[in-house]
Length: 207
Image 1 (cartoon, rainbow, N blue to C red):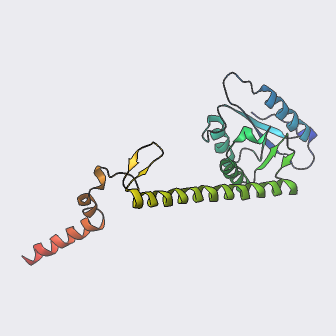
Image 2 (cartoon, rainbow, N blue to C red):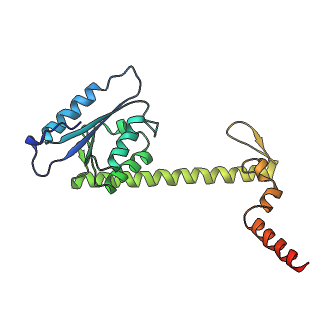
Image 3 (cartoon, one colour):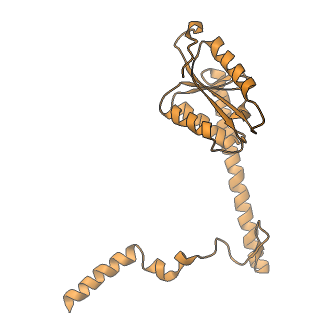
């Protein structure tokens, strides 16, 4: 459904997707949508569709966000408008992944309450800051994982076990072996099976 506000447009017409989110079913997204609609009308954007989720922003997979991303990949619009950045997501890493994909698709991103518009120089600067913060967060996660591994190795060496996040005592690093981890199955898979087949054929020819 496209709402045409192009009579207010200056320059090439933008086709917008409006995204709103509330955390619970009791909350109403109408106030967000009214502001987004008014913003699109003022800028002369045609509105392709409205995407509304009623779910926590911590969830990376959301019904209408997923639909928004599918339509973005189909080229249905060229700008996405949200009310606040936390409506789109609360994880900097996830936010950057979304905005980076839109940027690669030639889709601009606008946050009305912050006045951020990635079609402008200032907006591109903010996008760069997002990238730096996301990389910083990834580095912190790697550092925490490495520190935890070193601590567990020391505990194994000094006391013979470590306690995992579930409060369980473990005597070795890594996941426990399952049925598919037996040495016999590993030896008789992939390259070994091909070698065994060719070897048996050779022996049969020599008999």
